[in-house]
Amino acid sequence: DAKTTQPNSMESNEEEPVHLPCNHSTISGTDYIHWYRQLPSQGPEYVIHGLTSNVNNRMASLAIAEDRKSSTLILHRATLRDAAVYYCILSLIQGAQKLVFGQGTRLTINP
Amino acid sequence: DARVTQTPRHKVTEMGQEVTMRCQPILGHNTVFWYRQTMMQGLELLAYFRNRAPLDDSGMPKDRFSAEMPDATLATLKIQPSEPRDSAVYFCASGGGGSYEQYFGPGTRLTVT
Image (cartoon, rainbow over all chains, first blue to last red; front, side):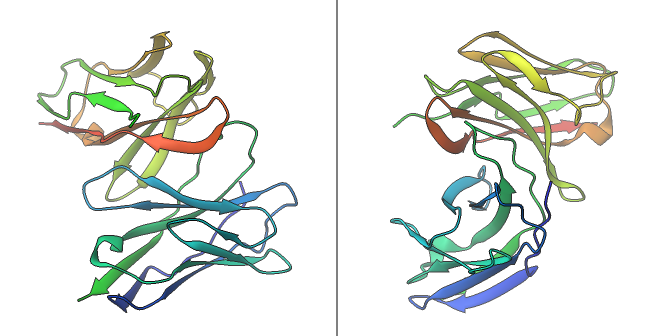
């Protein structure tokens, strides 16, 4: 499984944008980039995924570098509820695939 | 609002006892995953099933752990005998059936004393 590298922690202020980076220099052409997050005392939840093009959904945006060796999850206006551990994961999509979680980035939001 | 359910939510048991954790995947999902989370190891995949057939259980200690899907609405994870090092939160997730997302349950917090 290709590896991802994320900062251990980040901090931001409420109502400001947050950019969470992820490096995946060994990504293969068939790997999708997934982001999940885990709120305190809950199971992980899906945030967004993409292959080559930038993606937007109601939760976040995913910006993928042209060479696909890195990506950035963007929370446009962080709220206190966005405080969580964010995981960047590479996986094939052929139906549901197993996820290999790293340590993720612990995001703290200051009021 | 379809959800993955897990029972029990909390379990405290003594070393050597059998533990059974249950998961009800979302209706229509054909893939079920078992993960374990500890402070030291983080989230790790134990096993997963597709269409009730085991696909990969390489993350599971075979001598004491077993995972089954008796039917499409129930997945079980058993530990026999349990040991203190099995203390963790066990998550079940389901996906597939046209969905690329995995939906996680609330977890079973297991404490083995």
